[in-house]
Image (tube, rainbow, N blue to C red; front, side, top):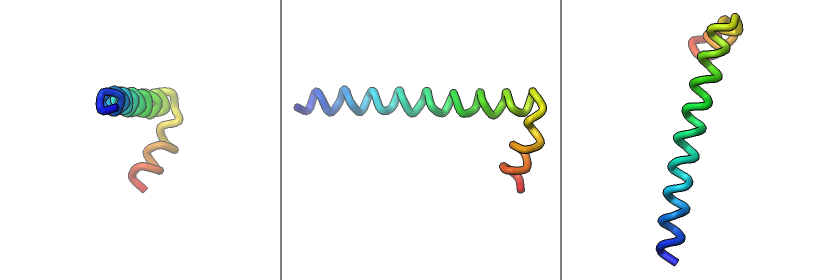
Length: 45
């Protein structure tokens, strides 16, 4: 059972890394394509 938990922890870590990369790509795309004013307003008030 411990092996299964280790596999799930590894999967969760990879998933979190992928989610972070996707989020930053989306933010970067919004900034570059003109939606940046909205994003910057949300981030910096």
